[in-house]
Length: 116
Image (cartoon, rainbow, N blue to C red; front, side, top):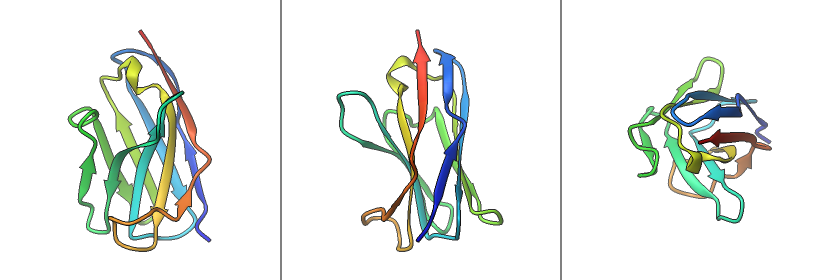
């Protein structure tokens, strides 16, 4: 059972930056960030595979950067030029399989609030 623990959420003004972290209890082939805003469905923000190849949602492309440090099994999400519409609960997820399937493991989430 992979344990995921997110940190780094908070409240900032539009245009600001935040960095989220997700510590995993063990190595996984695929890790990613998802978010869910109030009243909306969960959406995929970024996925990073075992080779470090990353994909992003169109809404965050060019503003968010996902990276991982495999030495410490930690995933990061650098969020710049934040917008009020980025406000959401952000979740880290992981899979022991290659990216493209369901993510089997989820963290409890960290709240990001962007004020205008």
